[in-house]
Image (cartoon, rainbow, N blue to C red; front, side, top):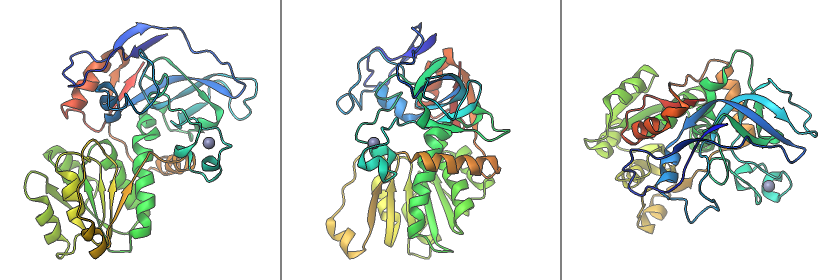
Amino acid sequence: MRAARLHRYDTTLAGPEYLVLEEVPDPVIREPDEVIVRIEGAGVCRTDLHIVEGQFRDRVPVVLPYIPGHENAGSVAAVGPGVQRFRPGDPVIVYPQITDGTCLACRRGEDMHCENGAFPGLTRDGGFAEYLLTKERNLVRLPDGVSPRAVAPHADAGLTAYHAVKRALSWLKPGDSVALIGFGGLGHIALQVLHALAPVDVLVIDRSETALKLARELGATATIQAQDDPVSELRELTGGRGAAVVLDFVGEGQTPQQGLAMTRRGGAYFVIGYGGRLEVPTIELVDQEKTIVGNLVGTYAELAELMELVADGRIKLSVTYYPLDQVNQALRDLRDGRVKGRAVLVP
Ligand SMILES: [Zn+2]
C-alpha cells in the first residue's frame, strides 16, 4: 500500500519534506480481534508536527521509519475471526488508543491510561496510508449519513475538545464565562460542544482575524485579539472576575501564564495544547483556589457520544482536504497557520 513515513526527526521543522511517500507492505491480521480499516480520511494534527520535531522521541517506544496519523476514519476492509460486531464495508471512526480492556484503568473507563495501551500514529503505524491495523474495540460505527472523511478529525481533535468540555462542566454554572484560547481545529469544536452542553458565555482569544470571524459566526459571545492585552480585555468583559474555566488549546508561548491569569477565583485552567512551560507561585493556587487540569484525548464512550452530537447536526467541522501525497504540504500549512479548520488527508 501507499503510505507516508517518518524516516528522521526534523527538530527545527524547517522542512520542506517531513514524510516520505512510499510503497510498504499491507498490514496483516494476526490476532482474532484485529481489524483492518480502509482509510478514507486521516486528520493532520499539531501532534504530528511535535512527532516530526522529536518531542516524543524519549517518551514513547518507536522505531523509525513509521507511519504517523492518529485521526482515522474509513470503512472496515477485513476482520479477524473473533470479530463480532463489524463486517467489511461498515463505516467507522477509529478510537485512537488500543486498550487491553482488562487493566484497572480500562475497567474504570479511563481508556487513555490503559497500562498496556498502544497508539497507532504515535507508538506504531498509523493512518497516513491506505490501510490501518487496529482492533474491534476501537471502532465506533458511524451513524447513517455521516461521511468518514468529514469526521476523521473527531477521532482526536474532536474527542479531546469534547473530553475537556465535559470535565469542565463540573466548574460551570448557567451564566458563567468560559475563555477559549486558540480557535483552530480543537477550539472551533469546543465552542460548539459548549453550546450543546452548557448555558455559558464563551469568549474566544486568537491571533487570527479569520479565526475570530469564524468564532463570531459560530456564536461566540465575544472575541479578543491575542496580540493586544487579552488578560485585561477578558477581565473587563467578565466584570473584573475572569473566566470560570479557561480552555487553553495553545499551551505554549504566553498562553499558559495568560490562561492562568484569566482564570477567576475558584476556577479551573485546562491545559490541552502543549509545548510550553507554566510557572506559578503556589500561593496563587491556594489564595485564589485555582485548579490546573491536564487533558489527554478522551474515552471510547466519549467518542461515541460525540458522534451522536455530530449525527444530530450540533457540531460542524471545518475541514480542508489534501490528497495523501500532499502530506508535506499539509504539515507545512499547519506549521505556518494556513490551514482553515482541520487538514484531512485522503488516500
Ligand atoms: Zn487497559
